[in-house]
Length: 143
Image (cartoon, rainbow, N blue to C red; front, side, top):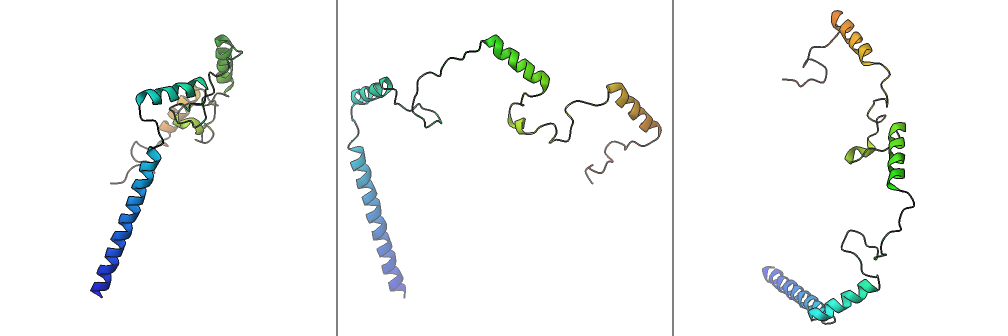
């Protein structure tokens, strides 16, 4: 039984060696078709840039299309639009919290009470001993 396992191990190693050698041969033949001198590589790159078919070195896989078209709006127009969107509440938040809208977090967009109203409610609750002491709430850490 041990001899059969040994022979099968030899067969596996031989198969792995054949696969590795075939891979090396394929890689060598694929590299044989590429330009070898620096001048040839530069000339090929220059021709691709002039034809605007060179893919830029970025995450995008789209080919180079040249400069984007100029905007018909001025900087002042864009700034005015941004300020108007901010005032109306249409401007989205930037960063990782952009998808966390005020409604989703359970807060209203605008407060319904003034600061003085909130302070007077808190004072009334304190006088009636309805406030929970700090660190003793339901969500306070347990010891």
